[in-house]
Image (tube, rainbow, N blue to C red):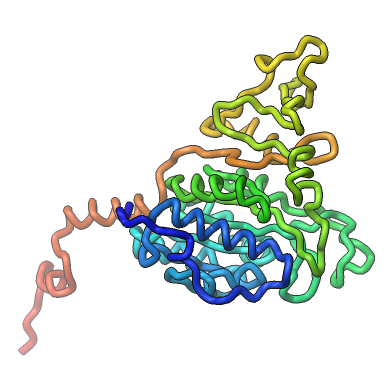
Length: 336
């Protein structure tokens, strides 16, 4: 950690070129603030993206950055982290870039537990190419590439992350700076692959897809902010809570049927067993609130540490340490 005190301004660069009202503007601003809070120097930070509207973000960061090719952000980010483990790596991907052509790289980054901070901006549409359905578009979604509605079920990012042995998953809303900043900070502090799903509307091609939580009033009614060690309460006056019912969850109202806060489930983000965490991540309205905050945060060995540890161990036992020693160590012949 650098002792220099940074401000959001230290991480700003360029003039963002997104549509007015796009959630990318808000996410960029809160990411600048989160980076300042973390205190990692700009020259010790790299922001790597794929292709898409959100993938322009590295241009607006006063850090190292790379705007790569479609779907390959995770692959490039993996290489950068393994080659230089001292870098703090932020990967920026959209739902199309990260989960369609980049889906294979995504699941293996999770499986390997590489120390990357993956921000997945999910607007359920391909915006840059002008409105085709994406891997997270709901069944029946009408778009330019599905004029009669899609006939397939979408990926749910949390389900994909958990299925690939992901150790950190969180969710926030792009325009909710108060809720987003602590989530981004927690993701960066997690040692290993962290995924933050950012819910945002595409104001041009899919406006309203996350309207239930797009405003502070909507989030008060339709979302639950999860905090480790605290009861799962939600509602405008925290009048509702979550309880277990069989193998599932149910919504209850405090005061009804003798239910008190002591009956409400307490969130455990550090539990190794992800059964309950996944149920929370998959909750949808109108029957359940949408879970925001850090849902899963579990420690595990990282790929990058294991690689460098293995190299050090093998190097200590090796008979040679450079190419010249290799040539001269074993049998040699002199040709006359």
